Image (cartoon, rainbow over all chains, first blue to last red; front, side, top):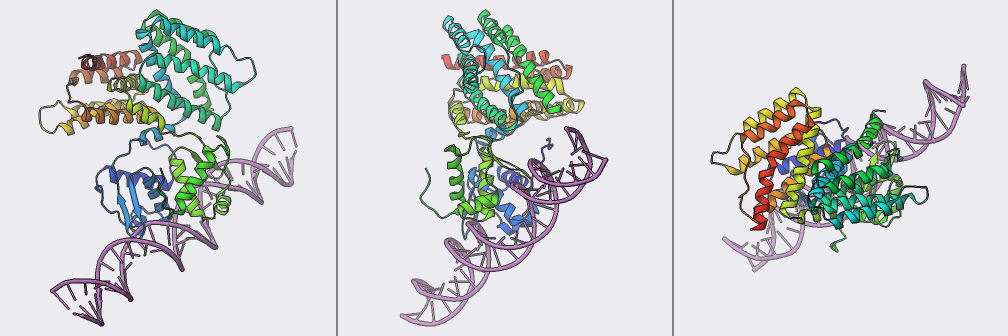
Length: 225
Length: 225
DNA sequence: CTCATAAAGTCATCAGATGACTTTATGAGT
DNA sequence: ACTCATAAAGTCATCTGATGACTTTATGAG
């Protein structure tokens, strides 16, 4: 597909072996070639082969038995996609989170109740505007509002995936860059609630897109610079 | 949880480092001691340290930057949301997948190239219509088309999450009910490609929604009955 | 004070060697 | 012919040392 990400030898070895496993070249229970053979086949050192094998063991694909060999334990790993998603770029993760924001807002608009709207307005009021002080707490209040919008959609799958991206994005931001990312103001937030309150999915959709556009644009500028 | 077999230095190193991470001895973004130091601290060789670190990287806890060091990326268990999302209802999972379909189609419409469109049309032709025979192979071809639409968006996070839901949905369907879910026909698929080809995100969005509506409606009837 | 360059620090990878454990081959004893 | 202890071979586990690639920091000329 696209291989623009600089890849190291061990990761290539992991993918090479994994593809042979999921491609059913070896069945469950089969014994892999020994480390020396794999080393020669993949044109990497034995140490690199061992790193690759150990990762695949930790992911449940393989099992090693000292003195005996390495065996296929499973040909699939359900946790892989999320692990990979977590390694995607900040831009991509944010874009995915936006997708959930938009679609959840549509659902919420269709399924809203007066109580839902009241709770959202209350959370938004609690959030307030940032005026110095404990930034972590403010971010948590902000996130609580967004989570509530998703939660109001009633879709548990979206709720969990959204939480996944929120945490992953927070990690990435904390680890890589300062927060030069614009924080939409009170009015932008209130617009979302109002749009949901109309009960029209298209209005909710549009409100969230307007909300997110400047943030995504800022991320693009960061990448280009 | 962990077996009592202590027969493995690398696993002990993994647990030692992981416990220091989740125990907040190092915060997110912190730099770990270099490989030589870890090697001395844990009383294992550098190669063993590297195996341990690589496993933790694959699990999302750490991140290594050649020439710079090894950094804490997350202190939380990344697999929890996954487990919860898998437990969501089939309806919710499908709805989440639709959200990705819609948003990815928008992105693809904006970023498409002639090659992209050509590949999509080729895949759709390969898919053909189901006319009896190997149903598994047909489903795989159908999925390949949908995956290609997502892949063309260029968003790696969405690609992986989509794969996650696809697999999870397939599991759920196989485990619980037969396939009384309607399969959109050739024309519905072709409409999506055409809409993407216009380059207009709104048209792509609408095409996917038209595509998905009957499927979601069928799921709703199932739940109500 | 700026900025190109050198130096130091760190991960990536390789090669070779030894030890531990498992499996298989061997052969004496019955 | 069979049994079974033992040797031999095969394989993973681990260590040591070295080289290359990349990043960060220190240096010094202008």
